[in-house]
Each structure stands twice: as C-alpha cells, then as structure tokens.
Length: 400
Ligand SMILES: [Zn+2]
Image (cartoon, rainbow, N blue to C red; front, side, top):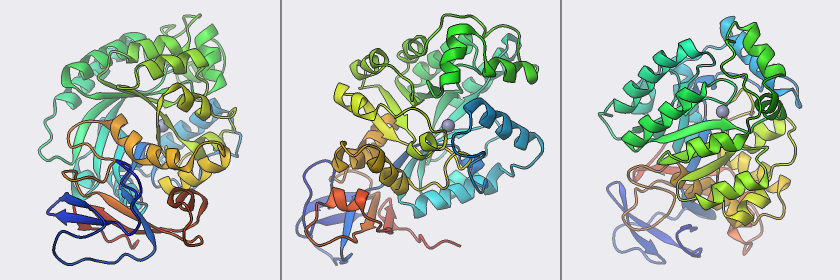
C-alpha cells in the first residue's frame, strides 16, 4: 500500500466504512478482508486536465511533430465539418474510460452547452472548468455572463465543482482573463489556462504576429485586441496569481523565472504536465526537473484524445518516466495523485490514503520481481489497473 500520506506499507490493509477510509495499517480493525494479491494500492489517480468532449476522437490529429497552430486549425475544421461527434455520449465514454484507468478525480474543460447527466451518473468527482474564448472585444460580454452563471450554479450533488478556463493567450482578451480571475476569486473556484504551450504562442505574445494571428484573421476573429506586442507568459502568470487556485496547463516553454514565480506560489498555483501530448507535438524537452527542483507543484493530465492516444494516466506516468529518468518514480506517482488533488482543490480533498478521506482507491497489478520498489514497479512495469474503488464501492471496470 502506497498511502502517499506516508511510507509504503508492505501487506497493508485499508479499512473502509461507508464511503470513508477508517483505518490504515498492517491489520484490519474488524470485518472481512479481501486479499488483492500482488498489487500496489494507491489513492485514486487524478487527471488534472482533460477535454472529455473529445473522447470520441480515435487518434491524435496530425502526424507527430505537427505545428501547434496547424493542429488547432484542423481541430476547429473537424468540428465545423461535424466530424467531432461530441456531446453527452463522448463525455460518458471519456468518464468510463477514465474510471477503468483508475482515475477518480478529474479536471475537465467544458463548453457552455455542457450537461450534468454523464457526470452525475459517474462516481468520478470532477472540477468542470468552463472554457472561455474571446479573441475580440465584442465577445467579452457574453463570455463574462457565461462564466458568472457557471460559477454561481449551485451543484445539486457533490459530483462536480465549478471552475473557469480562459482558454489561452491567443484566444482570450486580457480584460476577460481579469474578469474570470475576479469571478473565480469571489466563488473560491479554480482557474485553468493553457499557457506557454508552443513557440508560436511566445512569438505571438512578443510580436502580435505569426500563425496565431493568421488563424484568427482567417476565422474573422481579429480586431487587434490581442495584437499588442511585448507580452510574455509572466504577464499571464501575474493575472492568474490572484485566483484562489490556478492551473497552468502545459507550461512547456516557461523560463526559469516563470517557474520560480510559480514555486513561490505553490500553495495555490500548479502546473499540469501532459506528457504524451507534449510528445505528440515534439516540443522542446519539458522542464520538469527544473520545476520540481524549484518547488513547483506539478500535476499530470492526459489532455484530450485529439493529442493523446487514450485517457490512461498510468500510460502518461510510464511515458513520463522514460522522458525524465532522473525524476524519482515516487515523485511521479505523487504527481498523479496528491499533486493533482491539491491542484484541483475544493471540498473533500483527495490524493492520500488516510483515515477520514473518501475511499477512492486504485490497485495496480505488479508484474516485476518480488521485492522491487513499488513505485518503480508501477512506473517501469506494464501491470494493468486491477481494481478501482470510488467512495468505498468497488467499480466495475470491465469495458463495454
Ligand atoms: Zn487542453
């Protein structure tokens, strides 16, 4: 058992009553004990960044190494052609796939027409960040109203909590970003923003020129609002720093002063690394080692099936360890659990196996030699998810 809250326990036993963990140790307090065999028992995995509406996409768009702006153009074109069957069915499929992959908490980006149905039916608890897009001045007002309505919607059930996602520096007017952060602060909600994702984005911020400008002009979404030169990711980090919780999605090209800024605010600012999406675009090496050394809180995400082959966080972990052999497997597992839970925050915190917590657990089959370090066995092994519990109930993870 890897409680994350403390040291691994060989032959550990978790006591569950109702939806809660009541004991953690080597022996059961009372009641029947189920022997799970040779597995690592972890807190449920946390996917801090997904777009479940794209869960019907069969394979990542474009060839590996595709230019990021070109990928966006293809994604939007596919949407407009109606080749992206999204909606409830895609979200439901994404939730089922996530659950089978051991994910029990999720940060999802949603559109204004999102519906609660699939989330209400899934035992996964989700933070639903409403995507805000306003590259022109005239679109700000409607987006601001949508953000307010989303944040003020009182969830009838505890299965979701609201957040907002001003999409990215090349799609959001600075005034809307400020409003979104202010509204989120009033509600105690999180803000997630794609930032420093591509070199084209840095070029756009610095000059107001390049592929993003062409993209916006081609969509008739250019009124000059976003064309001011001389900007950089730190301008956005400063704006996000006023949010109760900020999730910087990707951060592939953050420099060391940017990441030092995040490290100083790691109680409320996090970065979400999406390893296989990073690989799909063949970005420069991800600055994970530097971020961790500085004390940045780094969570893990899958991003969508339009840039990653599936929604498996375990596969993201196993990809990440190959890219970052100097990062301890234990740190990677902590990123996939506790760091993600803290990044998403909110009520009923997750990410640890300890008494009082919701019994969200995942068992990973161990396929290595006995006695191997369990963290290494998880990230270097190929063992599948063996079992998942949400709120104390074992979930059927056999796929339809
Ligand atoms: Zn994303």
